[in-house]
Image (cartoon, rainbow, N blue to C red; front, side, top):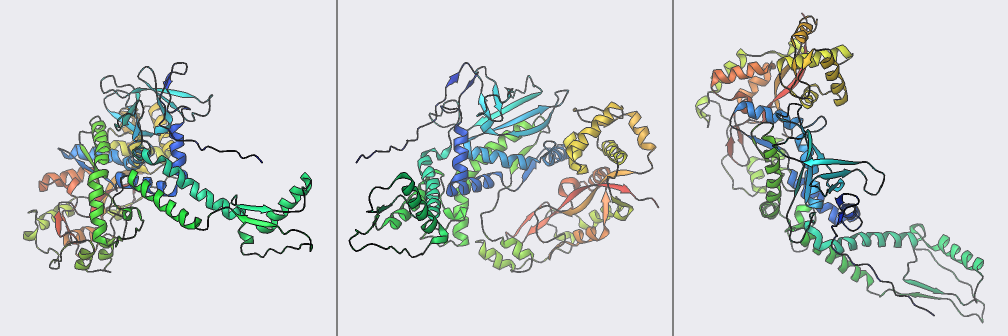
Length: 579
């Protein structure tokens, strides 16, 4: 009898080598190390859950804009809603966060406008598809396993030379990492692989019924190959798989025949050993990911009560020690790139920890103010009474005066109807009117305003440009004199208007208990405003109406006042109704 020893492979750090024949530095010995990390991410349930949750925390729930003037802020906010022809900045940021957590780096494709005066669009490029070239450039390939796949070369982003298309490459430093970054969790790669094998083991054990730990001896002599296969087939048909669980095995032997022997090769306490292994794997993966509290990822651990206050403390610690430094890196990158769009500072809005949304329950009237504060770990306060008089405004604004100004501008919403695109000329008319009122827009801005398919917008813009009705293609579009003549001949007036609406992600609807009388009256007035109207209201009141919107808001749970209310200026494309 011969026994063979099977050695399991050991994990080593990836090798980064210059491949002069191919012109780039390999990412791992086989140039497929990112694919290996993605495979672990897809197969390990624990690792997958942690990476996904961390990426979600890092990308947050939105982006704040800070700037010196209203124009810069408004321009940046518009670009955030359409950073390219297909996505918002927050959608791109979510992809960045995933790459950062999986690979410790991220890449962005930067496209300048034709005049190279500003960045026109920013796209996310999957980090796994990028390799470093030998001449300082970057090489992109959709599939590095395909030797015939096309490779695209990018120059690194340079604010001086401003290549029409370049790559902004960012990686976090780690000692000994070489040309490419190493993930933060690299110390737990073996445990992550074990996690994938645990689920694989259980699945195959259930499917097979008899595992490699079951040894069956039949004393009927040495069968022919055909007889051995037939016996094995009968065992599989009758005893393997979940459908046969709990079945009864009956064996018939001759009086002088030696009985069959079925031996269990696994130890009697194998279930306990497996449970211990699973807990050890979980603990090591958490440590490698710098997780201070598994509760933040929906995992309950023995000895932790799991109360809301305990979760908030863990969240704040994890936020400060891990999330914020990585958020800051992304925010710094985007703020730097926005210098070539609009000089503002961008800051990620943090996502609250996993759990019940007590603010939403308060807004819905299911909890009192102090019940919500108690669950969130705040002290009780005197119930908040809605402000009724301008003198009580904590920021010193005059609500009655401002309301009169709001009623002076704009016009009733019933004068318009939502724009419907039933034929090509309507789309062309809509884009011409949008550009007439908003000079300098990019294609992504128009997609965001019209809500049309990006390809339809691109094709229509090209058609209008060829017809000399617009100019500034890829530089900031505007209507030509010929285009203005065309608009004047249109029988339908298509306009961009702004409606006072509740901000996305805010629960409770347009008006909630405690809403100020100012907001209630604006809502009842059902008016829409042009951007010129909003600028005029700002000049008349001496307050930035575009940023402040309707005024201020009292957060009843935290018991603080903020200088913006729950509402926004919602952009709409409308057709004027003829009377």
